[in-house]
Amino acid sequence: MSQIPFFITMPHSGEKVPEVCVWLKSLPETVLMCDVDRFIDVLYLPALEQLKIKNHKTEWHRYAVDLNRIPEDIDETSVINSKNPQGSFNRGFHWVVTTQNDQLMPKPISVELHDELKNLIYEPFHQSVREIYANFKSNGFKHVYHLDAHSMPSVGTSMHKDPGEKRAEIVISDSLGKSCDKKYRDLVIAAYVTAGFKVGYNWPYVGGRLTEQYGKPAAGQHTIQVELNRALYMDEKSKQLNDGYKDVQNKIAKALGYIQSEIPNLKV
Image (cartoon, rainbow, N blue to C red; front, side, top):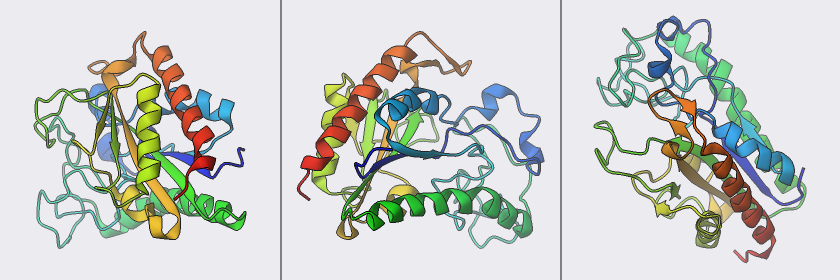
């Protein structure tokens, strides 16, 4: 792996449904894959391998456990006896409905099943992320740079902040300036722009629980979220790759190469 303190996570690319999540087993593919960051690993992995960039992804489906949430992001429609009211986390730790408002969970699960899924999916993923940070720091790096890679619908749905709005090709988010030093933010934006993408900033996404949890610039942890417009590489209805994906792969490789080459020059 590269000796540059830079790594990528892909928390929403997994498609494996745990056997205990019976409510997800009979769904049609177009519903089951509605909010998965399908193919984001396919798009990023060639560059990650070529550039030898450390990375971590999951095999598990985000509707079972969303790794960009925390275990407390539940409500009474997702987990029995939750103190949070109906609708407060219907796209939380366990997804109750899709962003197209298709029903996923017909009834809330038990606290015991919630804990089982947390231990199966959430804890191992986040333990690995913590270890990546710790390993870079134990090797003498005072600052570690983390890019959390996602994909997004090309147009906001009624469940989003921006219903009906066409989105940028890339949206960069830093928890409204809290999750990383502004020099790293500017570097990431410049990298994707230079690679040929049209880039937006903190709209309609400002970051998620990963940027909140790991983005601690005062402690040398710089986390940024990058959303990629799905229309660039897939048919959003059929959820299949289109002819644009090779071009997107090449642009991502340029962006990551740019970031990797410039990180040693950052003075944060």
